[in-house]
Length: 121
Image (cartoon, rainbow, N blue to C red; front, side, top):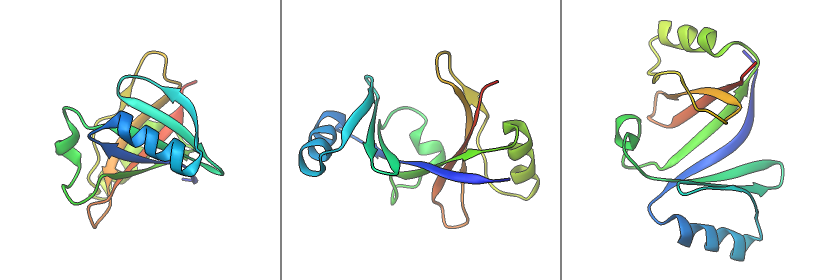
């Protein structure tokens, strides 16, 4: 499975304050914005700010608020089954109306959260 780093997501308590910090101090440009999500361009990758909400604790450790997101070139169900069969902790496959990807989160051996996403066909 080929994985390309697409973005890094920071889970934050104060979305507005973090948006101001990164746009003002680093000049990142906003690509998307909603009540719970801001996506900024940071050169060759994007930085996402995601408001901490329900379900966050289920797959995240208190010591880390970072998620690395990888685009994959295989069906999401295949990647999910392969990692699960290897004993890697993975969450449920999810998709949302209007979002062009199907995704699932997982956790590496040291508790860092990753997300694999595949373009919807």
